[in-house]
Length: 299
Image 1 (cartoon, rainbow, N blue to C red):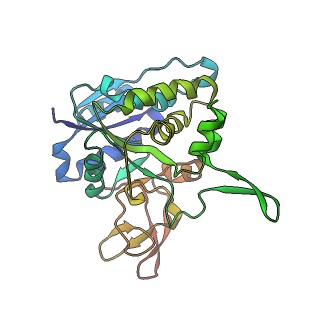
Image 2 (cartoon, helix red, strand yellow):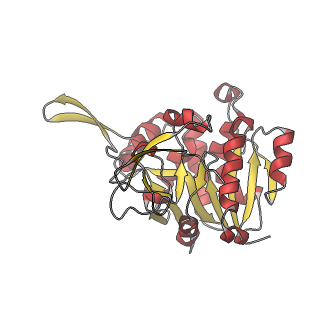
């Protein structure tokens, strides 16, 4: 067993994406320095047999925090919103835990190393959804020409999860941290603080997104140490990605066109790509050519 683990979770519906994530990790020679661990949230037996040949360990995910059945409605994959806050308990013995959502894949190993490096000294390593290429990060509902209600993802989720007005206001205008990819050391204090905030979020709020707002509150209100990495480490605005035809890789749309580290197909608007391997994306190259590319990982 190595001292660094990369962990993900999937049910049978997300098996292909999970399998591609694993293949993308294994495509790098540097992957020999990590152990790949999987949380099973409803995988089929034949799928598990395929994965067992590629990964270090597969463990059945559970509801680590009790959630009412009416919130679950048979969606066992929602365990990912809870289980990731308990990774050292599922896979003990590692020094560092890097979580990557199943609908993401590794395009450049240097971003993986940044996540591991950023978690040194009991620090959360994570990226945000605020980026020069992403455009609007807040929403304003204009009442009059100079008066508006400001809305943000952090404010909406903290409010719906029953946190105090003080906390909601404190996180409202902060860069939203995306928990789809993050890294923590096994003894970082974040785990317990995150779990406490997650329990609070699950009491009133929806399951989906609960772990994300709980971590944002842990960082911005509980003052947990954080390294906020560049957005190319967890890129999820697929429609404005560009392609370097010379280097044969996806890059940021603006100079210096840094290579995208992890491509993340997060959000319902990317369902067609998540569930259709043959769906192609129209991408502008750095040579200003429009080309069709598969945004999924391919060997």
